[in-house]
Length: 196
Image (cartoon, rainbow, N blue to C red; front, top):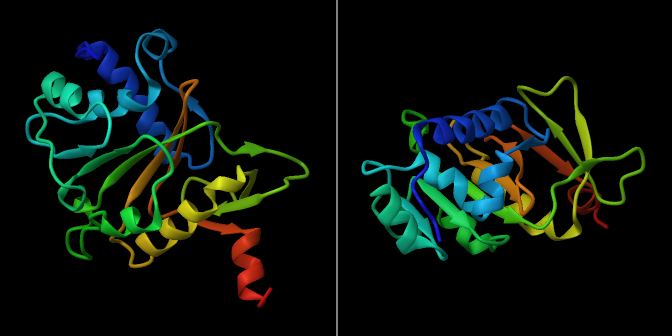
């Protein structure tokens, strides 16, 4: 059962989400007490949407709408979207991206994942991040199942400054931000570029 967050709780969640976008590829944690009470993946929407903010979700949508008073709309009309698992490329293609003159209308996307990509000296599925908030580059070991989402996200952020901002949220409350300004290179993308 979901409930409204207090002002203090909303502020804690908001700071976590903002920090994750400011420092892409780093792990941040949602408040433990909230994660123990409610699914971690719904906390961002409980903190960030309100009566003036549209959202879309295939799960908990009625509860989120009731608790926040936010309007539930079709996927392509939503300012915030919650995916309870990795979305298909088709779903990502429907997300609003804003425009060069109104990039703020790009969708904010929460994607639930079993585990976040992690730092590793010898990554099996390397995912290298570059862009603002990252010193040089950051290589992570990404779960293999992230591949399709990363490719679809690449297309969704190709026309800067328009694009989408994403958060990966793990079941344990870990959060990783992937703002539209972050570029991601994967071994899959490199192999495709080389014709393999």
